[in-house]
Length: 431
Image 1 (cartoon, rainbow, N blue to C red):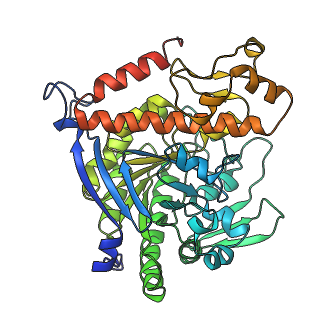
Image 2: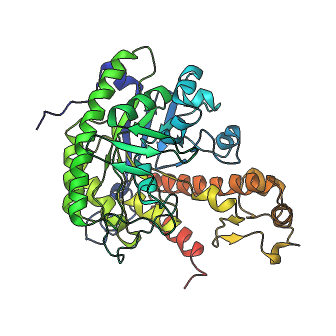
Image 3: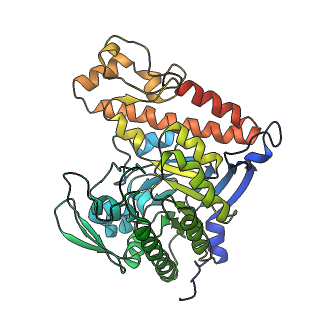
């Protein structure tokens, strides 16, 4: 086995990117020892600060998704006004359109989209699964599903094939064939210029067998080593550019031994931080995140890839996730669904036709300050594009504000009271 190659943590790199823990959840409880997790151990939530060349991120933090260098239907300036600290874009989609060379010439992702704050790019690993299995944006994560390594979603076709060297994709835009390897993913992401990027990995689903998960995890480990080596080469080659942090991605599905092994392997490679990805059963989300945070270095940030519901967010944060991303706020907004303290609802429903109140009286977003439910209802019925903009602004602000509250309550010792109040109200109407 080749010796791990560590990321180039020069003094300049350390100055450009760093992470510092500020408060720990177990240190801020009103009654020490009163709160323990389902396994009887202390919670692992914490607050901190991630430092990047384009600004700091106060954690825990929600990172909205701007897949194609845009948060759908929302101006970058609006994202800054509603409190977003960083944005995440999709390396695969930007590679296809407009091309990494365009963003490189523009000065990187942030400059290209007129976003002054920190940026993330994923590696293309999600497309290994979504195009390969045909699940695309919606994944069946039911553990009850029969294991099938060749499963493809009903009515879909396989558009990506994995081998030990990399992945061959067929473009969802025009059918052209493209090749991603760990080296190509690093080259693309360096040209995209995000502050934080992720190592190329293979995302599996709960449909895959234990045997395939083991094979895939070893493949992802080898790809991670190759990413580290290529990242070091490119960092030296592009020394005049701002330092880009590289996060390793933890896979292993629902298996504790695989998750812990992956964490130990990646920790030995010297990554700047870590992404926790892969198939996660909702009921085991906290347990899986905890397995990882118990193994990963305390002085590196951990990003949970792709969660959405408020209960999932709190579960992830109190088990040690520092940042997370999700496309759900804008996706559901485009169909008229909005978040509110008493649960989400669909503003295009008939009962809101004459409702002249805002989405949420207590919300400080631009939409709630200026528009009513009746107006939003009208926009959706008239199929006006402004409908998606206004509801997306509100939904993004709702999640940002909720996580800001979690961070502040961790710091002042009221986290559990805050969590119980938010979730108790949000889910009160559900059986």
